[in-house]
Amino acid sequence: MLNTIDYGGKEADIVHALEEDIIFGRLAPGARLVEDVLLARFPVSRHTIRQALYQLERLGVVTRERNKGAMVRRLSPDEVRQIYEVREMLQRQAALMIRLPASDALIEELTQILRIYNDHVESGYLRGIHEANDRFHLTMFSACGNAYLVASIEHYMRLSLPVRANSLADREKLDISRQHHAMMIEALKRRDNWVLAQLCVDHLQPSKAFYLQEIESGGDRPG
Image 1 (cartoon, rainbow, N blue to C red):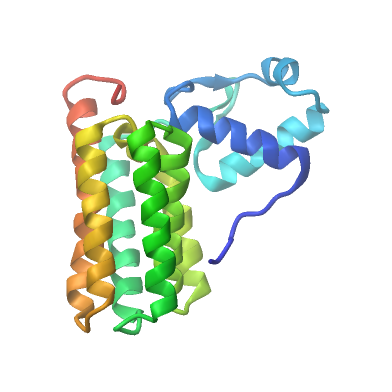
Image 2: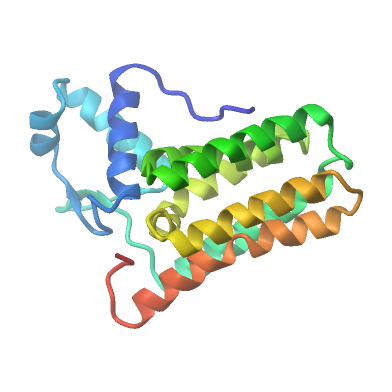
């Protein structure tokens, strides 16, 4: 599987920890990331903290404003719609480029990831659910053969972290998600790329729709 993000060292630990806080709602959209607070939490230099914040900004999950510093990015309804328009285009194109029927090795790898995903859903392990979900999609899309396309897909997956996070603790949404994953595996065994592509687009809709419903009805973010 293509690994497009690799920072290494203490900086990577901070990026990973803050991403996890955003994914699981411990840091809400708009929450400030104060350097002194982060220094008290992480035993590193101020330079390392600033580099980690820079990487989070580059990933699109943190923004900086004059006189306010760094904060968790707050997505407007228009931004959510635009991000998901790009995700749909990228994932549809990647699905259309996968040679079908897919190899037995790819089918077996995705089936194993789905088993792990299902185990984490049953046990309620949120971090495992998130990681297995991302691994499933990036493994599948890597079969398109275009590393730059896969890197773009991963980038927009990260941009949509606050949107995707609302599904992690919702059993109904998780059941739909793993049904979609199983359907994708079946589509990979056949020869119709358009069916696979439509599945990949349909898979994006529940989280997007729920997030938009929440913020447009006056909520700050899904709970």
